[in-house]
Image (tube, rainbow over the protein chains, first blue to last red):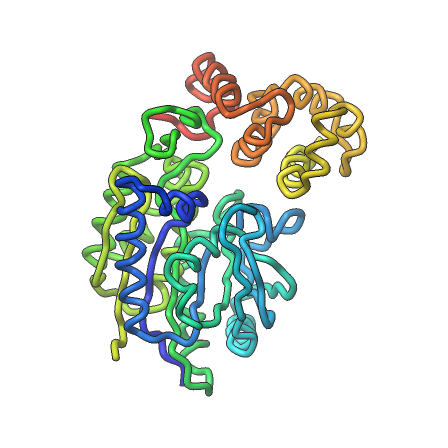
Length: 280
Length: 104
């Protein structure tokens, strides 16, 4: 039987792998925060990582499914950031197929993507927390950037449905879940290029919302997150604000509980979280 | 006229160094070959680097930013921001959709 052993949430800012190599306080902070998550993940000894993320128009260009699962034997990436470390990653074909089949056969129409490379939204988390694990992955694509985006409740339900698939697979697999993305960030907006942010831009348009999400996560108030993550609220959080849906899908894969680790990164629009469900 | 035609130029340019070179050498001729075809207004907005107009036409700011970062259509990040900011200041309520997000 499959078992969900832990769930994790991380950002995927594309320059972090390069910035982490610099001799700066920010580099130390990036390493520390991803390191906290990676440490918890490593202790759980997962065989597979199911990663929820929102492709940034790289894997899907002309045809954009609301939900899709990567069903293949392997993938690679990042396909959009040639100067980042690149990886060829095994995909758990059998589990991916079981997840997609279970979802579809129980009334949740999720597409299947069979030949693809992954962009930084999957590969930056992989770089920081999974590159040394030897685990395979199953990518789950959620259309979080282009309207119409799915509702928060629908993403949560997707997580719950995939939990059923994982927990009913006949294979003994330890599965960790990863939600990838920010809570507030607006790229390509009027803040772009501003000199007052840590990355030479400051696209966090709703810092109060970031605090609210972190607070609700820390108190395991999942139903409030679902209620408050409206289109309007995620829109106010910037054109990347819909990435919260990846965390929400992740929350759907386990019974609500307080995180073992959760920290917002300074004034940035994201956080790092770990929920250890089944430790060794 | 579709936002997809505009966004596809940006997506393809981001992925294809040869296309970026062609756009820099002959922007008008290269845009002429776009599939799906761009309207005259869309081509004019690209050639003028008028990102505010492209956004009004439905283009993704995220994708346009990539084109600016690559130095296409006379843009770079400072000019990209300057143009968007000027459009926003002229229309802070976002009536012309330049600012679908209400900036603080």
